[in-house]
Amino acid sequence: MKATWIIFILLAMVVGNQAADFNVLKYGAKANGKSDDSTAIANAWRDACKSIRASNVVIPKGTYIVGPIKLQGPCQAPVSIQAHQARFMAPSDPNKFKSQNGWFVFQGINGFTLSGGSFDGQGEVAWKQNDCAKAGKCSSMPINLVFNKLTNSLIRDVTSLDSKLFHMNVLNCRKMTFQHVTINAPEESLNTDGIHIGRSSGINITDADIKTGDDCVSLGDGSQQVNIEKVTCGPGHGIAIGSLGRYRNEEPVVGITVRNCTITNTMNGVRVKTWPASPSSGIARDLHFDNIVMNNVSTPILIDQEYCPYNQCTQEISDVSFRNIRGTTANQVAVQLKCSRGNPCRNVELSNINLAYHGSSNGTATSECANVKPTLKGHLFPPVCQLSST
Ligand SMILES: *[C@@H]1O[C@H](CO)[C@@H](O)[C@H](O)[C@H]1NC(C)=O
Ligand SMILES: *[C@@H]1O[C@H](CO)[C@@H](O)[C@H](O)[C@H]1NC(C)=O
Ligand SMILES: *[C@@H]1O[C@H](CO)[C@@H](O)[C@H](O)[C@H]1NC(C)=O
Ligand SMILES: *[C@@H]1O[C@H](CO)[C@@H](O)[C@H](O)[C@H]1NC(C)=O
Image 1 (cartoon, rainbow, N blue to C red):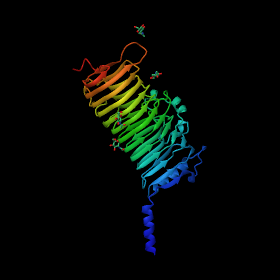
Image 2 (cartoon, rainbow, N blue to C red):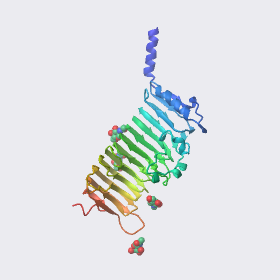
Image 3 (spheres, helix red, strand yellow):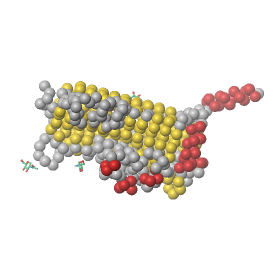
Image 4 (spheres, protein in one colour):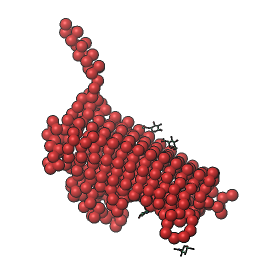
């Protein structure tokens, strides 16, 4: 009899493989937009993370006041946070974030899912105090959502509003997907990059809508195998690779594709920017931009490889393609390929470009090129690198 029971229980455990739920309301969250729910969320996370079967942290409809919080692994099994109708509000005072560089920090988890949730960083006070331009860095401001050392993870249907600094930062992650993310901050909010990726590989971003005050998506050193698809961007500064090479020991950026995106009213469209770091610096190669619509973008296509004074730069840009890029440019110079004499860009292709100038002065779109001899294919307007190509 006893043996039968044990077998039955074991069977039930195997068959009943539904995820275990950890509801934050049972941990004392009030969801009333007044009391601080940080501890309740942290405790629900702690128990979910200890669960030996897959678990859900359930965050029901409501408004949650949450201070800086770190949800950390390693966990025993995959953990999801389900927050479809939850709204999170950060303290507006940046001084409350001295303990960590982000508001929500997710760290060291394999098999993490964040599903839903609107994260309001309440950045207005912080933007006024932002001294990044003067100080040269913005270490004092928190990022809305920090993803650090995550693997096999999914972020979907998540909204980030008015972050004090970057909205999302992806660092040291492997195999991660961002699906249907919405990001919103005013055009004039400083340094509010939408999604910044660094030292991470196998990252996919699809169906994102990003309106912000800085780059919609920016890729820092060590970004590898990143696919960006169906992103609408603007206002903002566009989709950017770099700036790279400002610091020593940077890792290369390799294997980036940006496809089927629409970029509207931004400063740049797609941009690759490097600085000549010395002596060791990386490379940017295998970068592909395809099927992108530009609406009133100041500089739709831009490679900016800063002057390399002693011709010793190891910083190198190669294997880059811009294909099927069309729409309107707000400045006359629609295509700018400024490569350095010391290390010219190699193997650049432009094919089917159609950018019309819609600015206030008379004239048509033009291009500027230096130290690059791109392969030109299909219809190209404006004509690109006419003098330097054959
Ligand atoms: C990202 O997309 C590529 C191409 O569609 C696919 O091969 C890869 O498996 C995806 N990666 C993840 C982590 O989903
Ligand atoms: C991108 O757009 C092209 C042309 O509209 C379409 O054929 C292709 O399937 C799209 N790719 C993705 C991944 O959406
Ligand atoms: C073009 O973009 C600029 C910002 O770069 C914006 O100020 C302007 O209103 C836009 N024009 C139109 C017609 O949307
Ligand atoms: C644009 O061209 C028209 C016709 O040649 C001319 O009347 C007008 O003054 C020009 N505008 C500017 C801003 O140059």
